[in-house]
Amino acid sequence: MANSFETITYNSAKTFSYIVIALFGGIGLCSIFYIILCFFLIASPDTKINAANGTAINPVVGLIGLASALESLLRLLVIVFFLIWEYRSFKNLTALKAEGVEFSPGWAVGWWFIPLANLIKPFQAVRELWNESDPEFDEEAVFHYKGGGTPPIIGFWWAFFLLSNLANNLSNGLLNANNGRLFEGFPIFFIVVSLLQLAAIILVILIVKKITERQEERFGKIVKTQQFTPPPPEFYQNG
Image 1 (cartoon, one colour):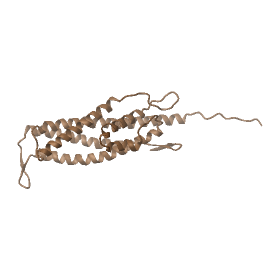
Image 2 (cartoon, rainbow, N blue to C red; image 1 turned 90 degrees about the horizontal axis):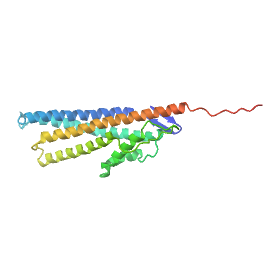
Image 3 (tube, helix red, strand yellow; image 1 turned 90 degrees about the vertical axis):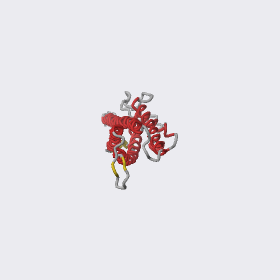
Image 4 (cartoon, rainbow, N blue to C red; image 1 turned 60 degrees about the horizontal axis):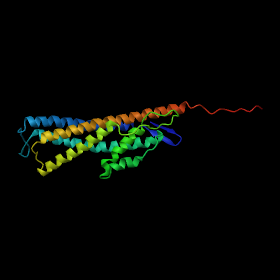
């Protein structure tokens, strides 16, 4: 949907939000699958089957490997579509009459790729996107976010996002140090990693859904405001 007022265009990010939510949902299912497999691994750590090359492997480990390959593909896709959704949503802020916007659409995306800065700037950008998409407006029908601070859902999402990435990197480091073999306590550790990731995914799905809904509601109010603006008075001259 594209609607314009003068030279400012609003392009709904709803379609991209559906794609992002679906992809994150797929990664979340992978996390749940990991948790189930790890419980099987705890219950039967010595189960082995003979591979085609004659080596004995644990089938649960093989399934974890297959799920990881699928997750890697979903991660690549979700990065692309999430950034497209974020860029479009930020670009809509002008049409939504947001005031005091710090991040441009380009930098909202670009900060994700700058080391160290990407530990805080993307969080600030998403927080601003949430706040400036607020559908509330003042009595003069000039839309402006009047609140402040960080919505709890965004704070918790970023905390779980950072913790899950830290734990995942630590897990990969331990696997590499052990030449790819499972280290002692791997199932428990991987369950924790998967739970952290699942929490971050649930929260980001809610954030994407809610920001998109807030923008749609805000735009709808702008449309109504402009539709019902009274026309200027007409002046007649008696001839």
